[in-house]
Image (tube, rainbow, N blue to C red; front, side, top):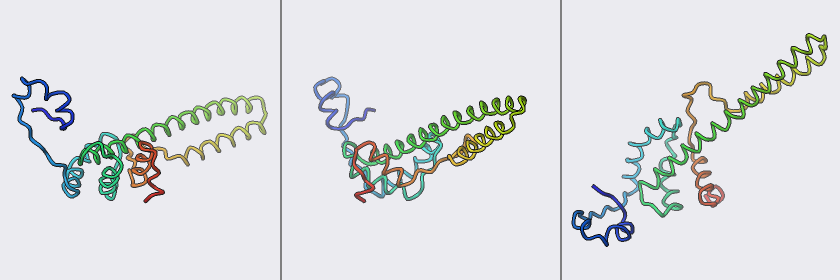
Length: 178
């Protein structure tokens, strides 16, 4: 079984008569909105598991309409599923960026801990207190960053995430147009 669009068939396969005789052309129409929505609902759990994200329910319909409007190079449901996949990947990368920043800050806290101990041993209590305050400030900052409590913590993909990904791929500020 082979599958390709009409343009690629004409470009790569149509000239080779031996191959063309082995295939039967079956034209498949793109799915309508309801069919696309059903397909997305049946496949989205696979993407949620892979990217460790959860898609909010209103995201599905927005993914269909945004992909119809801005990604005309592929048909439904492929366009909407690709957009959802990109959003999941975006959220996964975004959470890794936070983890790298948090790791750097935690290392700084460890360095400050050594400084604090050195100041205490040298009876420089004012300096030790200043270092402890820096550590506390860093800990508060880290707690302000969305730090996953467990490895399995899932981020939510929202409509704003969809719009952000569309903007990153097309350069079109979807938020301002909607």
